Amino acid sequence: LEAFADALDVIERRSDLTGLVFASGKPDSFIVGADLEMVQNFEMPAEARQLSRNAHALGERVRSLSIPTVAALHGPIMGGGLEMALHCNYRIASTADATKMALPEVQLGLLPGGGGTQLLPRLIGVQEALTLMLTGKNTYPKKAERIGLVDALIHPPGLPSAARRAARQLANGELSVEREEESWGDQLLESNPVSRRVIYRQAAKRTEQRTRGNYPAPPLIIDAVRTGMEEGLDAGLDTEQKHFGDLVFPPESQALVALFFAKQRAEENPMDDRVRAVDTVGVLGAGLMGSGIAQVSAENGMDVLLKDQTLELAAQGKKAVWATLTEQEDKGIINTFTRDQIAERVVPTADYAPLRTSDLVIEAVPEDLSIKHEVFSTL
Image (cartoon, rainbow, N blue to C red; front, top):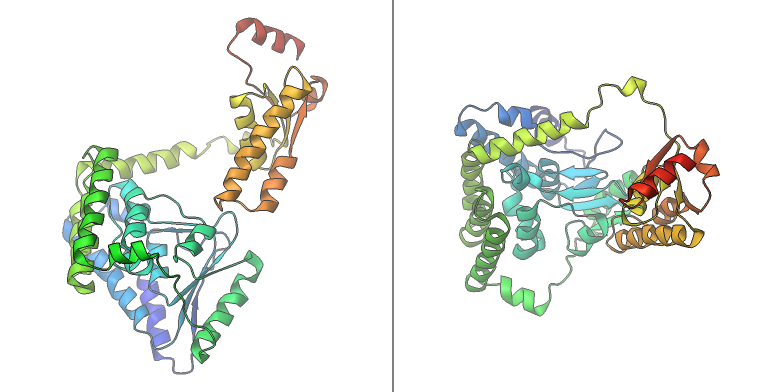
């Protein structure tokens, strides 16, 4: 945050700027969120509240700039990174498969502390915002554009120039930010305090059913949103700061943060230098498990030989892979080119011979010892 504040000091003194693009110097991500180790080391709620207060102050400075601001989004845009983008006038995202947005704090027992509980409902509506914040799930580019979270999409190579062009066009009036009109029903539901109370109650009820009241963050997220929408932005930001501090120390959030770090450590392989490259995988069995293994392997760039008793059964396994990939394409998680590229890596076969030259063979035949014995003896 200090480096960001220093950069804003320079920008605010410049009188020759007509627009500003926020982009990452990292090739694979925008901003992946706050330093959880720092949050974990806080000793008092006041420290967490001060962190939130500092983030709010920086966001206010971005929103107060006299020039148009554009966020160029590529790769993971998580937590504080997405909140930073919300302070900008315009957001343009790459269509890369790696591009995804989320406010995942609820999964750590926390709430968005950089203005997210206030800016997101004002941008995409209370219902959509609560859904994103109460689940912490990823939103991919197509859906992000549809719900108004981003204003435009562009292929990855064109992102830098498109972001600069948008900033220039916003400055000279050639481009205006147009939000998609809500349906008549949504407008009616979100346009007054009485109907919004229905939204808050429904969100609380769904969350209670999902969490059984074991997580303190969801009710406080709803409260922060409600305060901001009913009492104004400043009151909402104050509530967000308070609740952020309240949530850092309960055992639930500490356990969830500890679990997050444990999962990261578990994913680290201390024997990486001894691992042999795997380019071709043989999968024995093209059923539900086998086709799933084939898909994951192909998604990670490996060529897959999908073996079953007959070529027809093996082809059915590839058909299942295709169906799952098509479903991902329909949801905007991957594009058509990526779907086709992954599917082409899966080759059905009824012959054992090609598997003998594979770097790795994974057995996924039915749980029948006689079948397993036959498979391994033949292989």
